Length: 445
Ligand code: 5AD
Ligand code: SF4
Image (cartoon, rainbow, N blue to C red; front, side, top):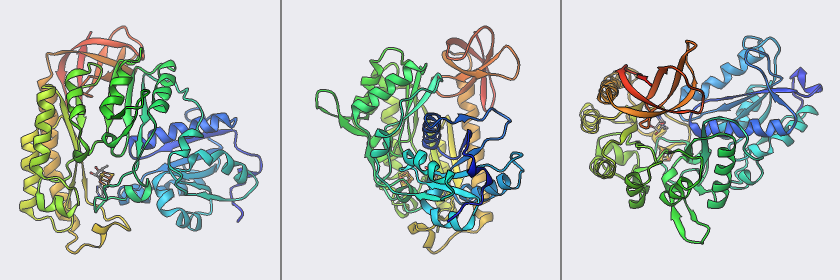
């Protein structure tokens, strides 16, 4: 099949990767960039056209998935940039709807799934010859071995340690788009972390769909879980902060909880999605935990690390959710007092069990519930920010603010902090938090 993209004849010189959705996609996007660098392309400067645009897509909710067709339309009609680029679609929509994209969008030259993007350079050769290529194989671990060394310079870095999911929550596409749970080998991860540190990383966030399901063998051949990996990473010179996301309540090992009290470099923050505060809904979601077991787990984290900031994910309007069941979610929120959280309207995803359940709820009910939930979550986020007012903490400077002397970074609890003064990107600065806002806190050096 011939592509209709004119730039194919010459071959792209510059590229832009646009990543949507989760942090795993951000990581994948960076790695695709590294592959393209090796192939001799260079990142298109901000504001300038790119010869190749990689849309690294997210399939988790309907809105996210539909966005790709409008993005392709804008790129081909000259609305995003002057000249229509060669287009590659990567990520979870590519995995789930690869064939449909190829037939619906003739301007797309390449479709590549999240487990196959190490083959992007070969696909590019084909595309330059005018052959459209699709690769949605799932060779899982093979991908990582085929990627170039890390070299992106940044004080904060993502490191994918685990991929895929075996939990099969009834609403979720991840087990279908990202495949079965796999853990990357311990030594590979220590090696990649060393490279990230050499390139200037001071904070490393370990990523996985079920990151706390990671397991491996350390250098001595001992079986270790995520806590063992974190303890080993903490021993590397140059790493100042370690985080991990996203965890599942059912994979939480005792040692990980203990590590929060023992490993100084492990930041006091936990993102632990609960989705609902009602046990019937949790069962229908196939979450395999209850509201009470979740709350008990959080209690243990708070015992290990009293100042730990808690975050979570919620879905409102799951099929059949009653008003009373939704109110159980509000009660759970009242009990936990999250420092920040993510909440979504249920979105039926093709191929998932929940999509064909009876009692899909009307949009207005979902809208109303989302608003009420978010009002509480915002209240608690503000309360958390207020509670840390007056404290001193370290801030890792990530970027410049709007004004010349302004700097932006994160507190240990992952709150955004801005301050004025002498600093540079990558500094760990001790600041006093003086003024809480809803989304950030002002600090002074
Ligand atoms: N509808 C709405 N939200 C969803 N999530 C996952 N699948 C769906 C869906 N079908 C949310 C969950 C998950 C987060 C990444 O996205 O809260 O934790
Ligand atoms: Fe999806 Fe559930 Fe797996 Fe999370 S644990 S990725 S919500 S199936």
